[in-house]
Image (tube, rainbow, N blue to C red):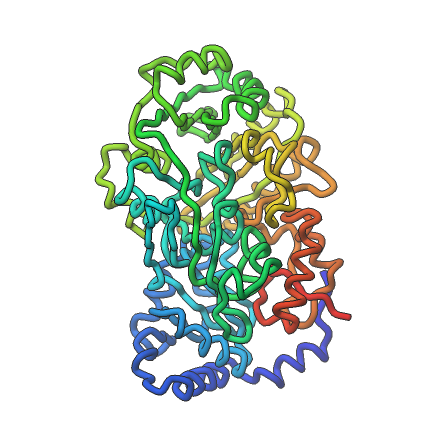
Length: 524
């Protein structure tokens, strides 16, 4: 990684001075930009405000970035209207403060609320309105809304409309849609970002733009290219999808002594090629008695009577029976995949918080050639390491279907045809083990190294929303070259990275919207 020169560091010190002065300048600027400062002052939190800590921590889901040593923002602003955001951007630029935009707070590396230089956070929690148009089959969703709340508002209006987004219900749509956003209907309908048909974004000059005024290139870039590199997206307009009145879900658990390894091996050939109405994912975890548990979980857009013969024909080895299945509405299936019993009151979908939070490290890979059975046995060896006792899982999400039909360049998300499935492996640990965080992170890296011969290469593909700074980072101070950023950028975006750089150069040539893995502008 390129090391900042002494002159660049001195320039940063001279231009930004001390963080405390920058914060004062920022607040003074805000007071001048608003004729009625009280209209904004009640949503501005500094360290002097008694609510500052609780506002900051409320939307932090990875406790690795909630420690005493984690850099804290000079201010957190929770705007109540998009019109309040342009002055914030203007004043941050004037005070030489970076801006981080937080929607739901699920960024795996905390980039939506952590920076290594003085910064402010624009927290979109108050911008969470959702308007559903059943007749047009569309919805406007403000960027601070959660996936769960979107599902709830759709179901309020229609039992036969849905949306192909993720399973974690507390994720904010701002980052989710901006990075692609996959879910259990991706084989039928593609990604969440594939269904974005309009957006509203505040650019570096404080202009509020929609699809027409932002232009084709910027609209392309924010749908899967990491919207935070280009501005502050305040709302998305999405096209809803048809769902049947009844869907079927199932989960079948197998231990290694129940031929789980052989079943996963067979799954690789079946899940990406089966009927696109059927999504069969795999989650592997370690149970308390030192055994590996493999769970096959599925969503079928149809009834049990149609699912059973399909499974008997395509995947008889799994031994699926009617007792493994539950027929329910699509909206209640989202409860099941969000970790709740399907009879849970639907209002839980409006909850923004998780009952448990932990320290965690995630990584992602893509597979284009089935992994040999013996290689899975090598993976299980990693599960038996002492540090794996804390809690780990590997999730494998099948592609194929609609995902294989959409061009790699349709939006910045490039992982389409040829991919069998996505692997996400994660390890978590509790606060009492925080001092050993490096041990757990290194376990994740060792497993990632082990997977190298079995996953994609040139580039080794990764999913942006499973953010991983191990892939490479930009310079904290000064310019980042195209070549340096390509190290991580090609892994997330493949050849689409080049177009993203051109768009960035056009709309934010000064690189105001930046983070450790933001798209850099070209420097001529």
